[in-house]
Length: 228
Image (cartoon, rainbow, N blue to C red; front, side, top):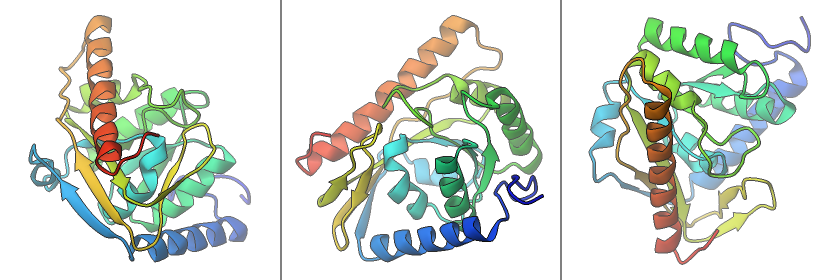
């Protein structure tokens, strides 16, 4: 039905939303294709990611280059059902990912269960934005820890930084690289979660992921002389 999310594709089929996805992806490609992207992977995460059984986690503000750099990965990513979420869903669908709709505020439990079942069935990667869809900024929620516990997949923290950037005045201080600049996509230490963790273990792993994401993000920004 028009206006509703197609359960097969994870996006709304309306022409206006399809146009948003096409134009949005084209704009990202036009900017990022001119950038020089280096990869910092001291823990060998790119080798682990070739096996497809992992969960990536990155902050909401860093989605632009991280998603561009991993096009075609085939990841299943939780995206909110809001209008802003629809824009993201339309774009990542065209980048070769599958949006699973829901958030911590609306339909989160159902979406998380759908994401768990999809990963177990397809053996594809999972993707979580632990401070989305509306923050608090750079504060991880526990959903990604639950996903890792249920699937047995390790969590791979990812971020990016760039020399020349525009920082938007949004809740997440969204970061966009300027055309032609140098970028670094950085991978952090993996976070593994045991099955059936108690609440103390969930909190321990949640804090571990949050600290690692902040460490590599601050490191990328500092490398280019930014404080964001």
